[in-house]
Image (cartoon, rainbow, N blue to C red; front, side, top):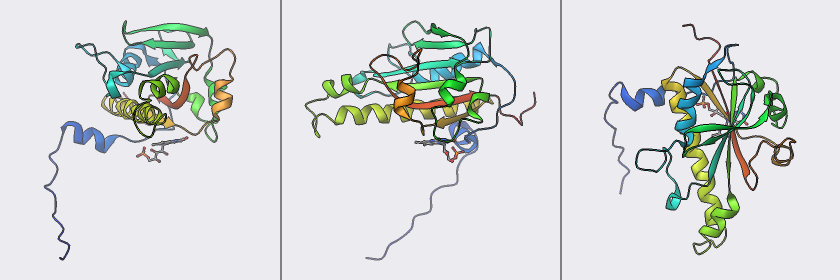
Length: 210
Ligand SMILES: Cc1cc2nc3c(=O)[nH]c(=O)nc-3n(C[C@H](O)[C@H](O)[C@H](O)COP(=O)(O)O)c2cc1C
């Protein structure tokens, strides 16, 4: 049988397709603070609670093993610090005072020079062990749960990218970091019992004028 290529229909302009088209990784951030309102948007995109009690990201068995930590350095109305995002209360809880962006960026493999210029870094982390236990009966035994957590981090990352694109912000997923160094930071940035899965720098892109 000969292969036959079926051309797809032309894309309709607008909607999610336009956002997907615009989404790009941004590594050049303007020296402008992020508003708390815009930070709220990207946090909810990452892991917000929806009206039915679920989340903006899909999760295997609705287990929700992810946590989002905001390493805020330049956010209007939010003192610099490390904050945990609580989806249930849609609120941030201070974990450590001060600007920890450089300390966190120093654990990356190649991005320490520019990443601290993002007004906020979102750390996506997950409880791999809890997910491993929960899905212990699914093959491959003991590993399926961990896979689900990594997939969910991808969903959260893409949600942040798309929300950033919609709001005129820039975002970049940085997953190249030294796990042990990030886990070893004192005061701690990664939640207890969690594994770091990805960092997302978020801010106004350098070339954007209002
Ligand atoms: C799993 C994953 C890991 C990534 N890690 C890094 C990283 O460590 N540093 C970085 O600058 N960009 C990182 N990126 C962003 C990619 O470099 C970027 O998506 C790619 O160049 C395509 O560009 P675009 O996102 O603008 O379409 C990562 C992307 C993915 C999906």
